Length: 214
Image (cartoon, rainbow, N blue to C red; front, side, top):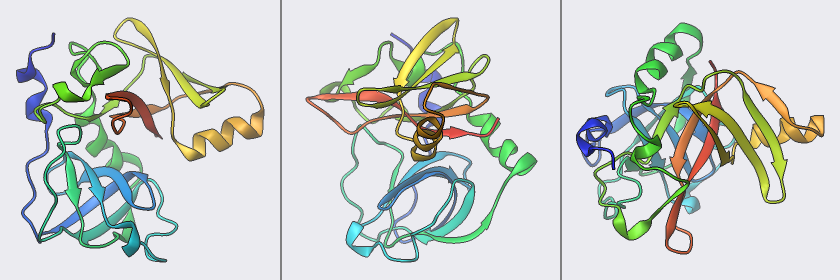
């Protein structure tokens, strides 16, 4: 087992309730988004009430810079997502970051090769073993290109990292569209945002949530 001391410091400091945050989006969604907190440099899961989603949150793209206010009464923390930040409403785009400025934020978040991905070997971890003291998301810089291949359940990403081959399911919608348009596996030079899934049958699974620029 990997010592928690090597990965626990990567957890993002807790945001004060009701505070204003600025995020660089990595994997935007309709009711949640993975991103980088521009004030702390840490990875976050930003969530908001789906009933509050409106035209403001439609069309958000990776590498958009957004702002939002955190909820004054956030829910109890989920040990599977210690980086979660509850927002009072959907984030609003205020700009974009690309090139060297985005690179300066992403490179320090690369998962160290001395550690197992997300602190454990294998594709899944029992939910009941999680205590919220290790990250549920990380940025992986594979050795060489990644291969995107369709599967019966959707899409998988094959990549080389830590002297081993890894195959993880991928939920990146743009990647799915790219593979569908080619009709065959696609090779690409990308970094990967690897996260834990929500619990399914008592386990949380490693998933590639977004393909990021190199």
